[in-house]
Amino acid sequence: MIYADNAATTKMSDAAINKMIEVAKETYGNPSSLYEFGQKAKEALELAREKVACLIGAEPREILFTSGGSEADNQAIRSAAKLGEKAGKKHIISTAFEHHAVLHTLEKLKSEGFEITLLDVHEDGLVRPEEVEQAIREDTCLVTVMFANNEIGTIQPIKQIGEICNRHQVLFHTDAVQAIGHVPVNVADQNIDMLSASAHKFHGPKGVGFLYAKKSIRLSNLIEGGAQERGRRAGTENVPGICAMAEALSEAVANIEKNRDHIEPIRNRIIEGLSEIPHSALNGSREPRLPGNINFCFEGIEGESLLLLLDDKGIAASSGSACTSGSLDPSHVLLAIGRVHDVAHGSLRLSLGEDITDEDADYIISAVKEVVEYLRSFSPVWRNLVAGKGKFIL
Ligand SMILES: *Cc1c(COP(=O)(O)O)cnc(C)c1O
Image (cartoon, rainbow, N blue to C red; front, side, top):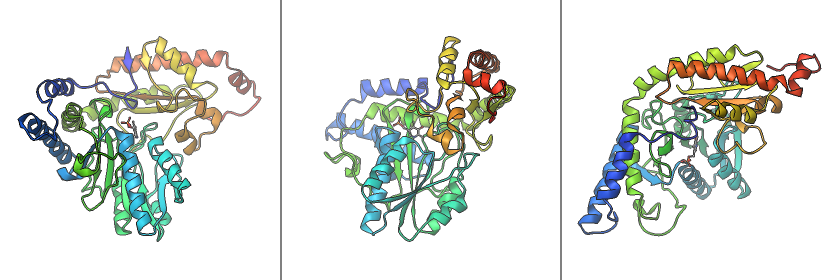
């Protein structure tokens, strides 16, 4: 079996699992309790906070632990919107290919009277910093642009966008869920005011993440209750999960270069192999791209059937994001980069992990070639195209 869906979630690392068990067994006190058991848990929690902060160039008090990336996105955007509203600024800039945790929050804000500008991400899947600058207005309170796209893996010019936002005194948030632990992220160097992360995308546990927010930013609560997380997120902290996340992030960050040097050549081998399939195309610019991301469209087939047949061959892949699969709508990301509906339906995302080998790559290439050919052999759309009734797009 080859697991090639690391953008959906990753396998927990041994170090993270061991940490989780150790903390669950030995540090089970409530961090808010004053006796020794509680204080031990509090110490573990704060050590994790220091670790995470240090790994992204932040201060410990700028890290707020959450239940994951979605919650961090919601809280960051809601907080900026509230601050904006107070100052009479109700315009937000984002992009058409954000994760739904961002897009759906923005839709809610729109119904609450905010104006939302979604920037074009062009055929290459890259936001243009100058277009961000052109979109900024007197009443803009937030720019939110993802660090790396979860479907097509393109890495955005975050540092430049952050610099522009700084210059215009507009808050800048980035959903860095796909980037963190995979490419270098440093909030100070990259001019980031707020950042969302999720442990299960870097070999940590599910249901844990964090929001970085510059200390000058007053966050609003999504959850009311106790005074945990400096009063910004009520509820007893998930101490084992948080400690395991810090462990996973340390490991991931320490191995970024080593992992990239291993994964990237294998990714390129697969891209070259799949490019040999007629009427296929890589989605998004080849560079700058996450080391493990491959996303293709194959004309004349359905992505869902492709996935099921690959599953039969022992390959776990995706047609896009886990949130979109199961629905019949084509991916909003592929539509955003200009793929037409028919073509966008025939998509395949492979997101490689550190354990991928050259043999796996060769197997994936031959399996995909075989399955695409098989599906096309009885696809009416494909037959029409071959018969000259209609035009190939790719
Ligand atoms: C997975 C993902 C999220 C959601 O994170 P959860 O921890 O699953 O809530 C948000 N944004 C991006 C880009 C993601 O890939």
